[in-house]
Image (tube, rainbow, N blue to C red; front, side, top):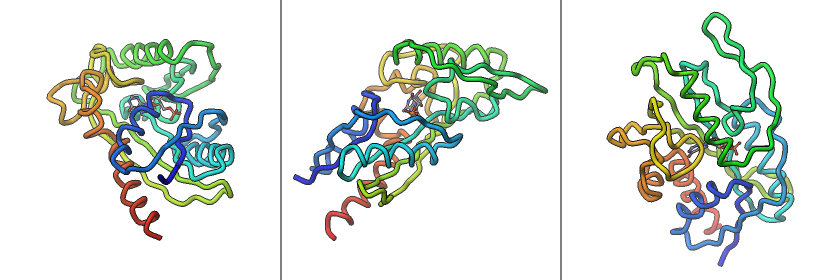
Length: 218
Ligand code: IMP
């Protein structure tokens, strides 16, 4: 069986990526032994940093991604700061939010996810429904140990931000993100299969699967 690696320290991403790629018949082994610093201010730059670092560590072909949520009424924040938004100090000038500083806290992933959601809901407490649109974005990069980027793709899923948290499934911003086609349910109210049918991650991994078919035939 052909073996690839998934470069991430996030167990939720491992579960989702592994589930979506099960049908390929290939083995995807998580490699979370490195946690490179994400120094870029955009998803693609950070995805490349991660892919190259993880591929070097795994010594094999490795898929890695950088993802997050963009909320236009918050000046497209949290964006690349999605994972640690509540560790950021914000400034609002002329109605526009900007990140002033960032100090990493020692909170667990679950606690920081909850605080991130609380912060977004608080910042948006006076934002009317018509301005609550949001989208998840992901950039997926496949790299090899020699530092070559073999494949790149981007995916999005559009929806809106609820006024309260709902649901226990998923991770990150799922409890406050209502999909455009989920009949008012947040992603955290969907089971894994239903989230994986429509998510940004599913879209980008479908493209990856098409590339994989080509790659394995070479
Ligand atoms: P990364 O590890 O820097 O790519 O962090 C991505 C962050 O974006 C996660 O920690 C989540 O907060 C958020 N995020 C990315 N994808 C999803 C998703 O599918 N659902 C909910 N939140 C997500």
